[in-house]
Image (tube, rainbow, N blue to C red):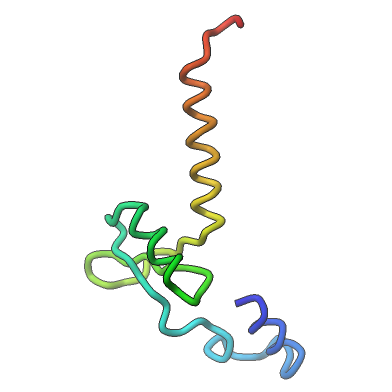
Length: 88
């Protein structure tokens, strides 16, 4: 997390190995899971993110509450565009 990186930079500088600041034991969900599962995982996790994994278990990304909020905002805005009448 940001705090871990800041502490590491203050203590040992930019040569700090990534392993010393990376998040471990991150909750993960399958890339095909519904968004509701991501929301539930974020709500129950003590971490600020959820890992997203492929069917074979490889990490393919992360999702955060901020990502979900942005998606909902863009999705809602898109509904407004589809429902608007041109020329008004």
